Length: 388
Image (tube, rainbow, N blue to C red):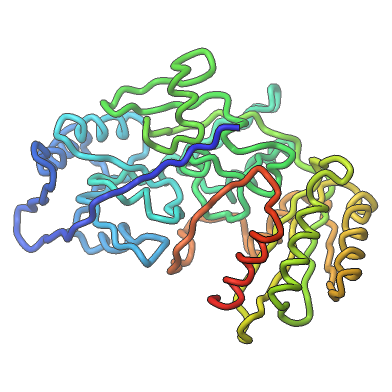
């Protein structure tokens, strides 16, 4: 399996708006963002445009991750693909960079990182074709709304992440996945085609038979190659039964105990004797007050009958007990797919008309295809237990 690492960097600088008419500073020779703004205003009458001179600019430019302070030159809020195409073309002929904000939930505020931000919230149509079980999803939709719409139209689903506030645009572009991914793969794996605005403003449809290189690139390559306005997905059948489970411990674990628990988990969630697509499992660590210890829990879903879930959970619990641990199992059966999704959305509504509550954090996502050796896990857990 080919693993790709996409590194993105961006230059952020202060924007001053104390003069009229508004002049937008440029950091790249040949770039004229004032001309880009004038072009957008001329080409798209009535388009909502937010500049640093507007009172709502701070709210519009606020990232989910408060550790960052992006300052786009202006933000547009289109309601059609044609408006997006014109905006991108204006940026193209005037040397400006463009980013699309789908949900605004990325670790590094990528959707707000360019000179010109295209806010995708106005493109929020979802169309489900029950005949061929496909769905057209515009990228202004967040995952929670996508999940609700698909389930209500034929009990369909996608292998997306658990946070309902994440945007369907970036989540798919960057290879997002979730608890249903052991069964259904990445979000990028179920893409049939995409409507894409290219860097010069032209609009194309990319698929396995048309613009094949672009189709390959956008499924995991992020927004480097175009701005996706609509995905066409091959939907999956939603599980009839979801068993959500949490395995916790009464008190924090020592580094050695947590290491042993992790190694047991790693062993039983692999071939046991063969992998099951019905299993979704994760381990979560958090700091403990006492140095040298960590809080630890296992969580996830089993998609299928409770007796099948028990056939995996009971041996896991037994192995933890044999290792001298005292695990506590809390499992709940859901015959409604959406109820199972809400469990890992903090039991909140999946309807997300407003942005998520901001946070302050640093995070990375890494993937390994192989089991980790005991010494590596031990060093990792020891570091967490001592450094937090």
